[in-house]
Image (cartoon, rainbow, N blue to C red; front, side):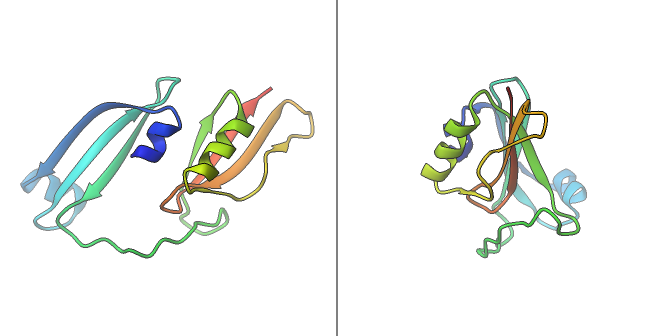
Length: 125
């Protein structure tokens, strides 16, 4: 959560869920999970989950963009170079330095957060 807060997201809502409803939603038994919704500077909402009831895998693998089923998040930013630097400072990784599109109107970089989730960072010039 602190990783995304440092990138400019702010807490919007948070709750602890358990019981029959969340068991039906997740398809797991005896589920106890906490979720937090973080609001991006542009108003979009990111929801993060933490399961308290089921052991999590401690193996962190960085997703590759061509892996079947790979998910990624995309963020538009005002200063891609500053954000990429901040991601590295926070312990994330940069897949590629910001690349300029052929028409020179957009810069794009792929990065990984602390849990290996692929992030696409975009700056419209």
